[in-house]
Every structure is written in structure tokens, then in C-alpha cells.
Image (tube, rainbow, N blue to C red; front, side):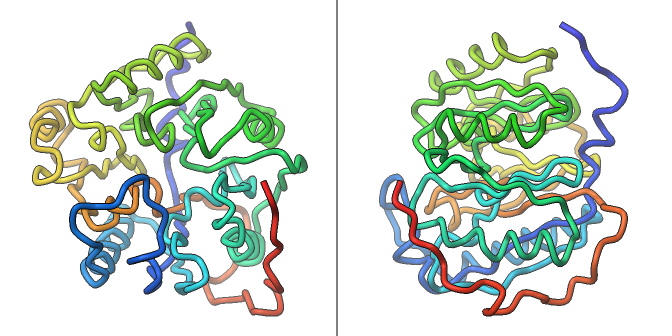
Amino acid sequence: MPTGKGKAPDVFRYHYAIVSRIPNSFKDSSLKQKEPAKPIDLEKARQQHEEYVETLRKLGIDVLELPLDERHPDCVFVEDTAVVINGTALICRPGASSRLGEVAVIRQTLRKELGLKIVEVDNDKATIDGGDVLWTGKEIVVGLSGRTNQEGAQAIAKAFPEYATCMVRVEGALHLKSLMSMAGPELIAVSRSPAAQKVLKRVQEQVTYSYMILTVEEEEAANMLYANGMRVHLPDTTIPKSFPIIENKLDFQNRYAQDISELQKADGDLTSMSILIQKVKHPKNFSSGVSDEDLGDFPVVTL
């Protein structure tokens, strides 16, 4: 396999991030694979989200915060609404029908505020969550999960024809990036869990390039955010078994520990709460140019 060394760090250099504030409806109406032992503490969730946003700023990223939307309890998990690579944004069709309305404000923001090229999914049968799309810096891996189907993966390949795209089946997890993520250039973090190891084997059989593997103990530890030479991972209180591994393997000067325990109660992870974007030629100001008139009525789509 080719190693493709030399350019990976540049593709993980991000200038902007889109995030969304947390609505009151998040506490009781957000989607959950299972109900948490303790209810979501809404104020604590908002505090943790504010700290997450501040961490993005510490990475040198300009953050565009969208207002909360009570109609969409899961709107904080913006990653699932769009996939952005090299100035092109594919607007997703989330696999949960309750989330389809979230994409309108994302589409308008990416187009009007950041001037990105917008690509739409042209197959009504397609479903695609951004959490199932792993951009390695050289190629794209799409997880076929309960939220993303083959038609959705084909939409990714069509939107980004300059990159190889492969598909892998995902079982036992909400998304592909629930099991693995990029922890650095050519470095994939993956859990030791049986589900993660099965998916890793499929990935290694399908990808064009070779990658180093960082194996962690807890499944949730495998989701890290890598941007601008820095890694954001969970704290030792959340991943006590994996934290020493991360300390030993990753440069302590190039990482932040971020607590998102309340957001994890709704299946949130570190990558799910932002859309990271590279600079385009003529970015627009971060003032809100999205009005109710722009958005109109959200369409109802039956999957």
C-alpha cells in the first residue's frame, strides 16, 4: 500500500467550525440508543458545550455558533448534517427522519456565510449521517450503519470524486466514528472492543493507503478530534483505562482533555458537535445572514 506521506498535516488544518447551541428540548427529546442511568443535566451539558467551543478556539479555529432550535432536540450534533472537504460541502440526509429539518440552516450557513460549493444528495433513497464518514486526509471511509445506507455512501463518492471512497459495514455502534477516528496524520484511534476490531479489519481490507493504529480500551475513547496539530480526547474520569495509553503515546503538549459526559448521554462524541472547515478564498463575515424567510417550512420526508 502507498503511504502518501507529506501532505496529511495540511488537510487537517482548519480555520472555521460550525456549532449549534443546545435547546431545552435536548434534555428529554434527543435521540438515545438507551436511556441514561441519570437524566441529562441541561445546564451542565451547556457548560460542557461552552468549554468544547472554547477548546476549538484554543486550536486557532474561528467558531460560528448557530442559535438553538427547539424544534430539533439533536441540533447540537451538527456533524451529521454535512460533510465538508476542500471547500465542497455535501448536505446530508440524516438517517433519523426527525433530524431532516436540521440541514436547512446548515446549508444556508455554508453557502451564505462561508461561500462553499454546495452539493445535494440526489437520491431520495439515500440516508447519510456525517458521523459515518471518516476523512483520513487521503481517502474517505463510509460506514454502512443504521443511519447510513449504500445509496448515501454512493452520494459521498459522487460528491468527492477526486478521492477514493470505500464502504464498510458497521455493527454494534451508532456510527463509524463511534468506533474509530483520526488521532493524527495517518493515525487511526480504534477501540479494542470486538465490534470496533471487526470494523477495523474491514477498513484495512478496503482502504488504499496504510495507517498507523492507536488501540484504546474504552469504546468512547476511540473518538478524538484532530485539528491544527492538536488532539482533543476525553478525560481520565471518563476513560480511566485508555487515558494512560493516550498519555504514553501522544505528545502531552499537543492535546486537550475535554469532558462531554452529559452530551454522551444522548450518544454525543467529540467529533459530532462541530463541522470543521478549511479556509476558502473569500469567506464572508460571521454575522447571521440566515433568516426565517431563507429557511421556509421544513419539508417532511418519509424514509
